[in-house]
Image (cartoon, one colour):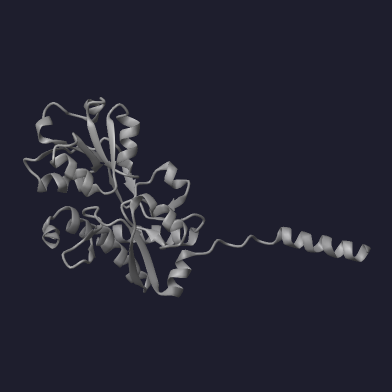
Length: 265
């Protein structure tokens, strides 16, 4: 009995002192599989879109292809509704969200973010007849104004936090929301600056763009929590492409030129 007690005590001590097992590495899984699975919600210009041939194009799409090439694997894009994109990541529907996701404290409770790769902010696209009378988001803080947002976005959060008195209307897609402004059914559409700049330029005379962002929003890649190996690789890769000019060339292609718009028409 004494020998059994000593043996069980030694085993318990050994288990207590053993190093904790590391969290599964997405990086290793991707290399073993030979495919990087990337989640996004297509339709967010110029980050991820579908061209006339039904292929995905955009800033995030090109970045994902660069990442996969550096890893020596293929890339697979998984188009996912935005309001369910974090649950899809957590249930292993894909390996990483590369879809213009803003880093927020609430999201950071559920996922880990790599270093931001671009900074944007929320802007306002107005009905044309409101030009001059609405000069900032503060002027919209009245129940008589209807504001359209995409469900689950930081635009929705910004309205709830900063324009709480306005009438908030939520839509499944950004296209549905912006059409309501063009058709005069709502007063304003609030969304990220790059998308709104393109929206306004394509609809000159029909809408007015208040182009100064009223929020600060760093965008970053999201992965499952506790995966330091993958996070380390992604951050080092971002530093590399921002230092060697690759990132700048990609930025110029998608943000300083509108040539890509021809692929959508």
